[in-house]
Amino acid sequence: MSGVPVELDLAGDPVELTAALVDIPSVSGDEALIAESVEAALRAQAPHLEVIRSGNSVLARTALGRASRVVMAGHIDTVPVNDNLPLTRSEGRLHGLGTVDMKGGDAIMLHLAATLPTPRHDVTFVFYDCEEIEADRNGLGRIERDLPGRAGREVEHIYRPRKHRQVFAVQAKGARISPAGIHLVRFGDCSHRLAVGQLNDLGQLRAGCRRTS
Image 1: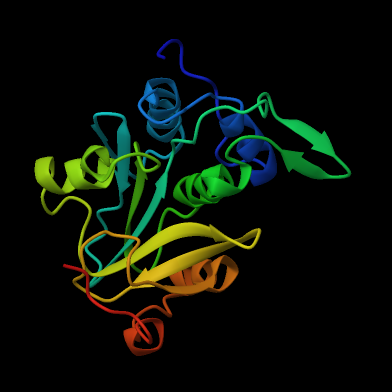
Image 2 (image 1 turned 45 degrees about the vertical axis):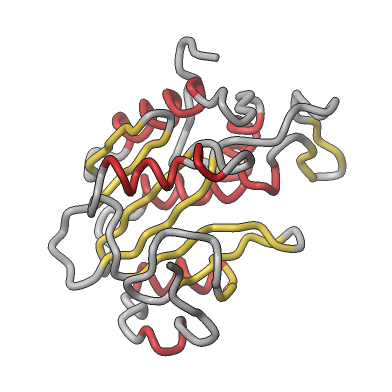
């Protein structure tokens, strides 16, 4: 499904941004509208980033010449709708398809992309398609094939939900972009380290990780 991009306020409340993303249907294979909305918002609200479209995936990169690069990747597709759209709210909670897996994570990544123009490390934000279906359609694989080197290889954080908490999955330096073999740490800790430059000691973040083939 494609159409007029939905307006997204990247610098506003991440909870409301989550709600807006959830209400854009994006079942695997049908991510055109959410990709167009994310791309339009990043181009308009994050002029400090280079924005690249790859199919229905969107990359946004700083180019600050830092010594290392952090990659944050989150998928924008969902499993099929099961009477869980549009989003509903109850007692301060959001309920709907993709709230946890993983549009809440995407919302925080988009918020960081728009509001953190000069991080201590260069950053690549990857919003990719077709994660919930067969691996040969996964947007990360297409990005690696079609845009070699554009995501970066220094440190890789795959943003994943776990037990209703937003966490990063941290891979070893030089590993391929893959959610396999990852070490989970809390989002708040990683975002603080990204902002103040405490990701330069990779030993702690690499504990328990393994390289992926």
